[in-house]
Length: 220
Image 1 (cartoon, rainbow, N blue to C red):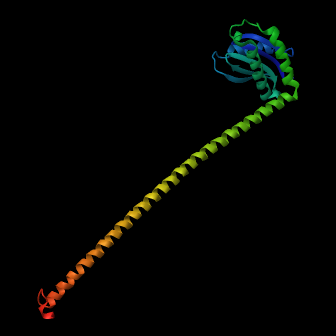
Image 2 (cartoon, rainbow, N blue to C red; image 1 turned 180 degrees about the vertical axis):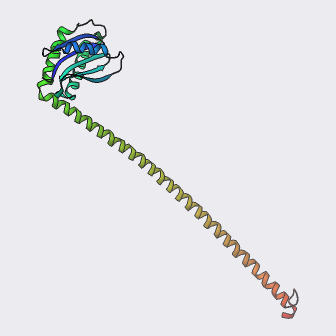
Image 3 (cartoon, rainbow, N blue to C red; image 1 turned 90 degrees about the horizontal axis):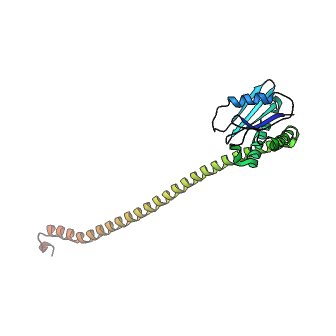
């Protein structure tokens, strides 16, 4: 069997346990519980002893421990620990925080036995965990793609802003160009009027100089 022993504890107080084989796993497990630092921090850890690995999951003040063969790896044991934690909390609720040692052993040891058998021998257990892992990878890819879409959205928004600025600048340029053309047109009109007015005066002055007088006596 992949999983040989399991227990649920609050600190060093064992609330339920089950052993699928005759080993000293229970004794070693208690020693490990005594050495785990106190605290509410959630954590996962693994300890090796001979050819067995003790896997530990601490969550919400509860410690779930199992002993497995080296060949079991980590995926199945930790999936088992998560499953046991959820079942234990769902079954006993807040009572887990004040229960005495082995208070849930008579009932929950059967659950431990059933789940040890399932995770040790049923191929669906590994298939389910592999599927969970694949779903997690898909979720990460989706998150990455969403981030890229959001980033692309920011770039599109920036492009729209730049386009709006270009349109605004073009409108202002056309307005200024139209104003400049109007100003130049009026300047040309004024210049033309001035020439029309000044030209006869200039001609008269020149003729007065040539004809020796204002009345142009020598020319008539």
